[in-house]
Image 1 (cartoon, rainbow, N blue to C red):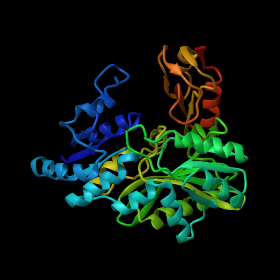
Image 2 (tube, rainbow, N blue to C red):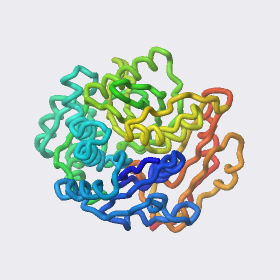
Image 3 (cartoon, rainbow, N blue to C red):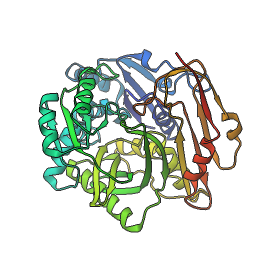
Amino acid sequence: MAHLLVVESWVGSMSRLLPRALAEAGHHFTFLTRDLHHYLRPAPEGTAHPLLTARNVVTAPTNDVEALLPQVERLHGALGFDGVITSCDYYLPTSARIAALLGLPGPSPESMENACRKDATRRVLAAAGVPGPRFAVCADGAEAAVAARDIGYPLVVKPVDLCAGMFVRRVDGAEQLAAACEALAGFPRNARGQRRAPHILLEEFLDGPEVSVETVTRRGVAHVVGVTDKSIGGAPAFVETGHMFPAALTPDDLAAATRTAVDAGAALGLDDVVAHTEIKLTADGPRVVEVNPRPAGNRITELVRHVTGIDLAAACVDVALGREPDLRRRDTGLGSAAIGFLVPGTAGTLASVEGADGVRGADGVLEVQVAEAGRTVEAADSNNAYLGHIMAGDAAGLGARARVETLLADVRPLLVRS
């Protein structure tokens, strides 16, 4: 039995999958958070949030690393941690610094800083010759307007330090660019109260299908678990509307995507880490979109588990402990698994979700989850606005995505206009 320090977490599926992996392995954990109320949402069955089942729950200034480190050092002296882990991007560099301070396994703080800052990622990958879009890092909208003329429209505007597609926009001209920069400037702190870097990342718009490569790197060796596909909606935003694992790719595209993802992780110096690297398959070859040095969100890890038997949350725990993860594939009876999200296109109050009960028992369905009535709804402009999802598998092959799309066609959120 090992004792892990869990530093904050997302409040989505990984906040449940990570405690499950810890419990199934027989480990216990101390949960460190600056704001316990952030996690007081009830679990689906009305039980306590799994993070609150920790052996110890400690309030600490997780947004102030210099104040946090000596407190964690004292905690380590009293409790004895064997590993440090988080599922939340905003605390990945902090967790790496804690692990380094305590002499515990984990990726280097520098590699995590560079992977989590999109502008740093671009600079490191460009210097290493890993293919990506043409880009510019701008201090403000005025600099962005000048850089845009050099790169050329269409462009993608990104914050350098937000997640879930927040404020990521395609822009086709100067007016749209100015509006995107203004919107970003009006969001000075992230959802965890951390002050954001004001920089604006401009990128060449990449045309082509997008996939993600799921990897586990241990002692300098990257293991490719597989490649997941992605569908996008919500233009000019980039909202993920669904995924399938494994992606239906040609052998050449599969090899190119995996090679590019592994090269990106190596260039960043990522080791002892589970990663989710997003790749665009353009006519000119694969291009890196982002490198996320943590397990995939949007329940992609569950798609992987349903198809291969590999539990990436458990692998994340193992590498945090300096142990070899179990990456053996098992016969699960499924050739593919897919998820599709209910993405609201308009604002209002959710009255009901029609058709959800009818698909729960349908052939191949693995999960159905929908939001409760009464929820205030905004038109989706990021991955934070979903009203639910359907997950299904296909035993015969790569038909899971088509199956999910058919099921989603029978499910419709009913909104009352505000």
